Length: 252
Image (cartoon, rainbow, N blue to C red; front, side):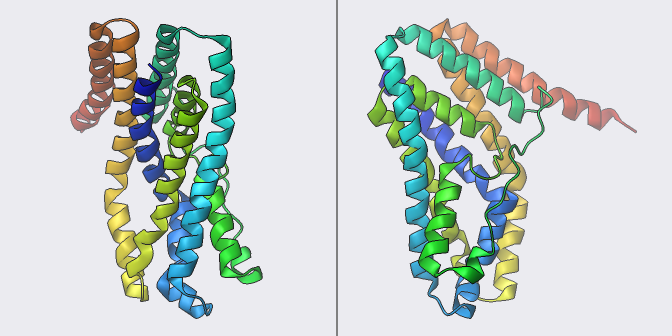
């Protein structure tokens, strides 16, 4: 059952990490760490990006290490697999409801950015790795989706320190690799084009972050209780998203 929870945690981790690109901090990174800006500071973008990605993985592994300690505790307690599945389903339902706007919690959570003074104060490997670690840790800067919290919860519920560490590493790798999105920004116009594309994709990223949690909740509910529970979760999520749209369409 640990491997099942792990396999459900991976897509949640990946999509949640991608959603982080649209945070003010993520967008700032894509403006501050580009071939154009790094050349202006006398640095090579490829080197800085490599340090950023390395820092991202280190940050994700740091988060994963904390989750691994919790997973070891859960394993020591000896929670039954069905109990772990049920707990995962409850947490996934709660986080999906947050992203769908059903609980009154306003995203993003924890509105903190990295210190851009590092760009002027330190060498490229320092700010590259330092920024990457904070981004990869997941909860040190803007949290754009409650899926980050679900990622941590599912890593814990694997009850396997190795799998929990792997979840964190995957999350950090995806977050750290996001710096490569700006690799084509060699001119101000090219940088503007990158941000225009991201702006166009923002609604899709928001929907994907919510629905990967809905599907995780449905899968966990089906495994913990009954397949009908999984169907009910998806149905309720569809109602929650369709009804507000229908009300808006009926407004004069």
